[in-house]
Length: 218
Image 1 (cartoon, rainbow, N blue to C red):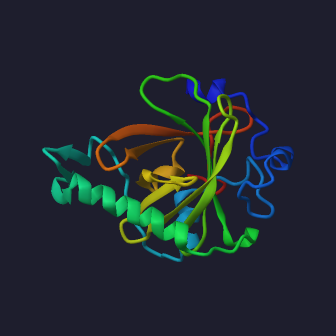
Image 2 (image 1 turned 90 degrees about the vertical axis):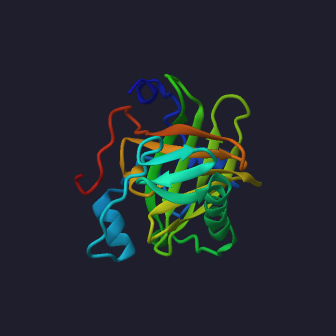
C-alpha cells in the first residue's frame, strides 16, 4: 500500500525516539517492530479457547441510517447512544490503573492513520493491550506539530469492540474491532464528538515498509 511504502519515520518509538519524548507511554522493553498481534495471540492472551473473531465493517455490517445505527441489520440504538457506548468504553480504560511492566502488555502494532484516497500521512498510532482489555499507547504527529500524546482506551471482550481517546480530548473517540487490528489495513470509525463520524483506515507499519505478518502466522 502506498501509505506504507511512503512512510519515512522508521525510528519512531525506538530507543532514541523515547529519549526525545521522555513523557511518552511505554512498556519497559517496548520496541518498534516488536511482535505484531495475530488473532491466535489475542485469544490466547485473553484466555479464551473458542473466541470467534468479529470483523467491524463500517458501511457494511455496521451502518448509520436516519439517526440510528444497525449492526448486522439489527437496530443497535441511536447514533448518540452508539457514540456514548464508545466514549464510555474509552473512558473506562482511561480511568483504570494499569501497570507498566512489559510482561503485562501485548503489542497490537504501529499504525499510520489515513482516510479517503490519501497516499501519505504523518499521523501515527502505537497500540498495546493488557489482559484486562485496557489499551495504552501513543499518538504522534510526525510532521506538523511533532508532538506525541498518550492513548487511553479499552476493549469490550464480549463484543470485541475497542475504543480509545487521544490526550486530553475525551470527545473525539476512535473505535474498531480488536480483530480489525490484526489486519494490515484496519477500518476504524472516528467520532468527532457525538454529531459527526468519519471512516478512517489504520495501516500497519513495519520498519522496512513491507506488509506485516503476525508473529504466530495468520
